[in-house]
Image 1 (tube, one colour):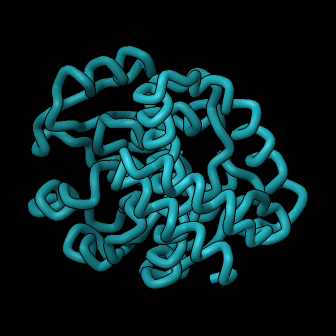
Image 2 (spheres, rainbow, N blue to C red):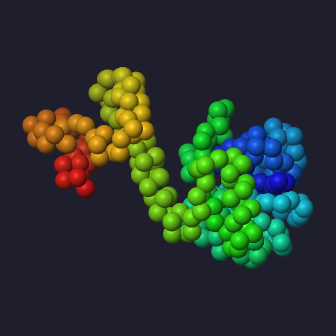
Image 3 (cartoon, rainbow, N blue to C red):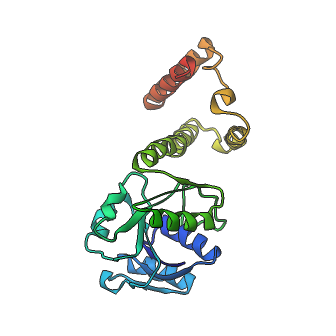
Length: 253
């Protein structure tokens, strides 16, 4: 397929590389950030523009890979009649594109993506479309970069999945950050926790999270928990989080 990518951030960069690897052609990249667009255009041997009026009209698919909050402004004066246009946001309804074309939809990659990635990760893709043709086109595009990891999902289903993604990725990483801060303040080495982090993550490939749970809370080891809470008295925010999560684990909530 001939694709125009609108956006030049992390999602745009990784999807673009995935599309090229799958044999598609990126005919243009548009971004308000002319420098970032130019860099990706050079990498992909294509053209770029930071003027909406110069976006080509002859592509098969237009992928709008910008932040959730930027979509409305970016698409405000776009018009690609008869073309398939999709945004990549989980929490934004597809109808935000209905004035752009009659063939609008969503192409949501469920993955934490960074432009600097050299090894392209596996990316489950959630698609949706305004009509059968759009659904078929976006599903086919998704299958080309993520075989057997494509799911059709409406607005509510994507939003629910996004909530779960925030919990397992964003919240978990924030706990790593809090643990790293704690280690620095207490003069211990966070890197010594990396094998534990890796083992915990690996275990989830084999058993469901409830069965993988270990630690004092699941053992109802009140004595150890109280020792930890006492030690965390110098770190009140972390102490509150520790107590809240311990109670959640103990009750199986």
